[in-house]
Image 1 (cartoon, rainbow, N blue to C red):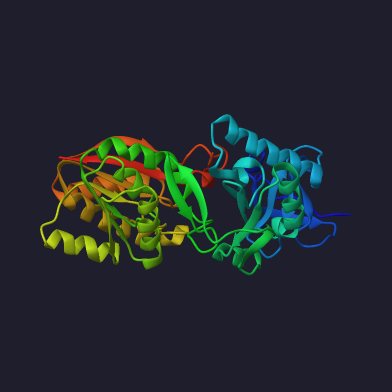
Image 2: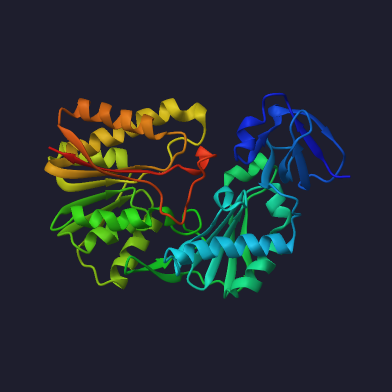
Length: 388
């Protein structure tokens, strides 16, 4: 007999509404016995069926529900879920370079799969998914016949599941660089050593959107990583300065610029906070400043410090924008909520002494859909502000 998890009285509302996570402190009792990482049944305090998901006694998220009917996990279920996830992307025109599976939003909690041309990159972020890794690989091969599958489960969140960080080839042969096209731009993607699974796919449409603001402009792209925003800006800008602390990232920017024949991109190495202060002190200014930093907070406890960090970098950015120019600014932290991010921008505008107006607001690309029942799946904020 497998595990049956009974919720405490009154704790069922959120999960019955569709949220997939059951926290350990919401559980009244557990009956039955099985292996850690097995499929467990979740019921309300009075025994009503809620759903089934993988259990992990080592994690604060005790059960990740992904089955709401009488299905069992296995090849048939994974084939159906993976096919549905891919069909959704294809229906929207996402083919060669996109997120093919976005965890909870595709009813496969803790599983990330990104497509780069003929190759797939996978992250397994929970014990239950880890135990079914080979099954998932077999299903991917059966459905899509990729040239290779690479694992990038070298992320710290796995420690919360009692798992070590791992990466390596799971199927076929995967080259050191995979060449893809995004928004008509050629990219050399390092899926083995680059950030996340090799590239930040969630900003695809936002990168395209910046082009309208960069026509003939002098652009500064801070936290540029491999140059997604820089390259899109370079299609129309007079000059682009790509700034990052990573020499590896800047080399990738130059490689990508050369692939596309762009000669209007230069790189600048350094800490963005220090460099922006130095540029302001030297009297530099730009028509467009782009800020796409890594997440400044990965837990609710870090929000206060993160707020100060976002405020500092956005204030610096506003001060570097010429009158009438644009600040493009982002946050990829779920814990920096949209209302909190807007308040921070308002505070920065007030401190800058400039008049600042919102021109455009966007979120993550549609290949990263979010669940209305789980706000954790909605995380990206993208603002275009005009600084007058």
